[in-house]
Length: 221
Ligand SMILES: *Cc1c(COP(=O)(O)O)cnc(C)c1O
Image (cartoon, rainbow, N blue to C red; front, side, top):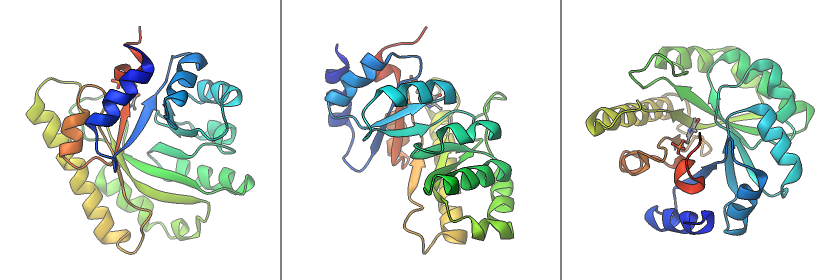
């Protein structure tokens, strides 16, 4: 199967109001261009240097989403062009994104990443830590970021009930934050969850954005 036909198949399986982030990490620019020609505009990368290198070579109307763990000292490299950061997991990081976005006179969409898996290795906030970020008085002065929703990764498991319960937990977190902080903010609307192996479950549980790599581009080594 070609990348273009993989995208068409996925697009048909997913309702129009779910955004597809094509996760192009480790894949060459030529693969991204093939997806672009098939109409795909949102691409996700998990490493700053890789995203930077690809961004320079590719069309300007691509929306670049950073989906992997982001170190504060690397924000400056992507702030001039990144559209959304899915992996905000500290106040310090949010502050730095705001500072660097201001330097580029931009507003960067951010998702708060939550720890929902039963695995030690994943990053993310607890609900309590998110409250601490959003209750920080300085947060109100962040004019160059927008909190656009939440992101999470479920356990890597074929236990669908476990994975479903983790997605459900993320949706509950979204609703809690929406009620407490964002009821008047139309920008707070995304639940980024679901990958190649579990995107249908994620959509059933309320995902508005799925992050799909191998199903589009083939496996990575
Ligand atoms: C790699 C990656 C994905 C995509 O994984 P696939 O299983 O290839 O679809 C999604 N989200 C994050 C955070 C990733 O690092």
